[in-house]
Amino acid sequence: MEVLDAAAVRSGLDPAALVEALREVFTGPGPVVPERTLEPLGGDPPATLLLKPAWGLDGWLGVKVATHHPGNGERGLPAIQATYLLMEQDTGRPVAVLDGTELTRWRTAAASALAADHLAPEQVEEHLVVGAGNVAAAVPACYAAVREVGLTRVWARDAERAAALVEQLREQGYAADVAPDLRAAVRSADVVTTATSATSPLVLGEDVRPGTHVDLVGSFLPTMTEADEALMTAARIVVDAPEARHTAGELVGPLGRGTLTEQDVATTLADVVSGRAPGRTTPEQVTAFVSVGTAVEDLAAGVLAWRAATSS
Image 1 (cartoon, helix red, strand yellow):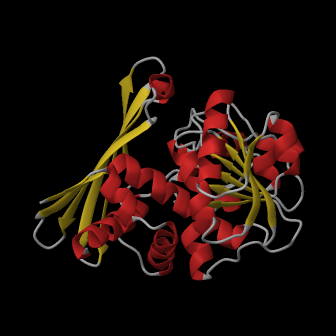
Image 2 (cartoon, one colour; image 1 turned 180 degrees about the horizontal axis):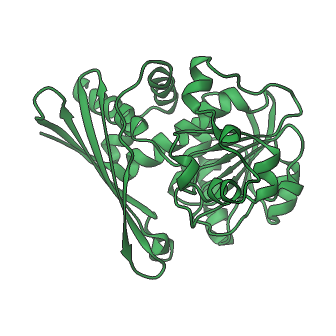
């Protein structure tokens, strides 16, 4: 059985190839994806255990075991820690164990880029990344596969971490700077990507210009939210998976209060990518992609990383 550490996973997940692998899997009939299992682990702030299986992609079966520890940033660790087990579906034989933390951050960023390819404006002069953690650092490389971005701006509660990410992005060849004021940065952005563990809104609807695409990737529990109700009720919403409707805090509250209906959040990324539903419909439309992370993304990324590692 192969063991693929973070470096091996990273080298096997070319951002453009990963975006296309996700495009293919969202276009087709798709693997079997049971709803994920969530278990509270306690602690302060509370941690969560997630189990995410999927099978039916070219004979592969995969399971991710992940934890979310929102206090990990203070420890210098990613909030999401994960391990991925890739198996033959017909026999159950384990083929590889992959670093699931690296897998998760790249498939999350790639899924956002895939959604942006259908929902974001064609011209992206400013892309605001809210957050400076593991996933946020992967976003520009994946977006580069679908859009030419003039400037990437980074805002984070920890200004030093924002500055460190900007320096890293500049070293990678991206035009980047720190956004000192979040609300002002939202007002000037063409695309906003949030990748945080926020439990109260960071992006306010009153600050979002017509035509903006907002990419919400941090909230996967009802207690987490990165955007306010004003934004969610004004935007055309696309979710990565149906379960987002009752697990993403941005949707749970408005749905419970009746300010959003089930029809408002019925469109999935698979619907848009496959052509069953349109992407952006007008230049002035505000769009929002709500991503809670679906196991089909993990399986597609795991297979891509394993094939890259074993073909070299």
